[in-house]
Image 1 (cartoon, helix red, strand yellow):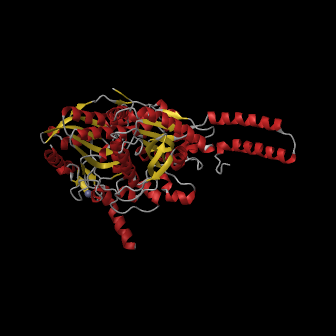
Image 2 (cartoon, chains in turn blue, cyan):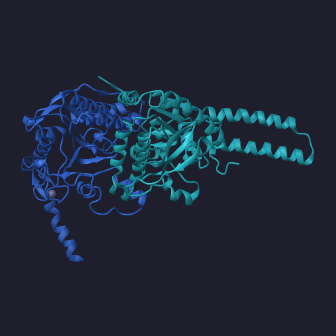
Image 3 (cartoon, helix red, strand yellow):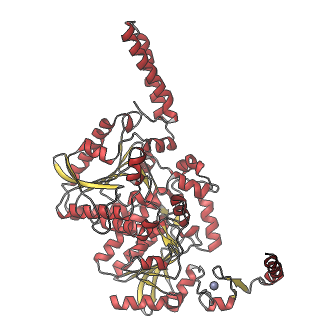
Length: 278
Length: 318
Ligand SMILES: [Zn+2]
């Protein structure tokens, strides 16, 4: 294998050249070096392999809502620390760090907007904020967005990205699953459509509550979806997981997702579904 | 008597054995030891009080997992008559980790549903250690909707280390099955009484855990994640589970203080496994009392109250 070593050695200096700070980035999936501006223009989708980079809630608002505009409601909801929770960090410190990092108050942003001129009640989760986890505030914001849809007779659109229920609020986080799901039952009684959009990743407590309950469930390509995390499953069954396991396409194949659509078609697809249902 | 002894139970079990031996010796040898025995019995009472009055949360988790603890089918046998077990979700199969069926309870036919663990390795494999697949949650929903159709109250016993994390479970939509149950259980037009009798691990427990009244047995635990799961993620070490149990506040008194459960059901001294018939009598009395109140409410009032209770869950500032 002498030739192989040489090739690898030969590649080394080239690798260094690959990272001229700031202007270029490497695709996490295919390794392609992409000009950042081009990536942004392509909605953070790799032009080479179609890999959907994770983007912020603000980016999604720009992609999905008309005039990139969300009239935000309930912006002042703040988490408390009902359990006085502490692991390596105190929970309030974790929240503060996340707020500073993301410039958001919590992992959910909610309000009113328009999608291709259709007014909607809209909520989006941001994975950068403690993994998009659902504690009392996220649960409350989702609940209020459902109630807003009912009161104003609007369809509901929720874009999820979450590792699940927030451990630091313990059982109260679990209860948000029941709270949001029960309210979706009421929304359904009013025959108001709910479109659930699943982005990378949507798992555990969020997937096992409102994210799975859309009248129509739309997922971005190759997003990690599921109830249990792949690591936990692998540990439990003691085998490697099959390729493509727990992707959007896997759940499409098994009947739990209606449509897998690339980011560039997301807005159009949501609008089309809403026009049919309204 | 107890086949399995927890570390903190040891001093009690040893003293009990000593008393028993002394009694046996006394009767076989005709030597009068009653005053010595009385002293030891007094000591035992004191020791029990001492140990059981200040159990840590982790010790309660261990009691909730005690292999001699009564399981759902034990409680149904002890609390109700004429049980007819019903099987299958009509879609895929019959999950053995969730059982259900009709039984007479306090003079009424009720639908019983519960997680089911097994005793011993063979039975535990059959029951998948009380960890349901989607078909378990779908069977439970089918039975609940049948109960609604025939206006029968629903009595649910929660005892699971979690919904099963496996390939088949994901293929068949574990998340969707649980989510659907949460939504549909909130709309059931009949009384639904939940009793957490052992382990209440996360979505696996909540998936059959939405009701009008939530009772929790004294030594059961209920949380968003198991102590081990939480420790693995936040402490990167499953061995920190005792610490995680404290941080997560998983005990019955915690959940009562947080307003998540309605009532703690006391257990016989030392835990339900020390006297299952007595544990079942206490639980039956509590469920009966709640049921007698709930059957007087109209379906509309039941659903409205259930929704309002769920709607109020959460702590935040504004
Ligand atoms: Zn790529």
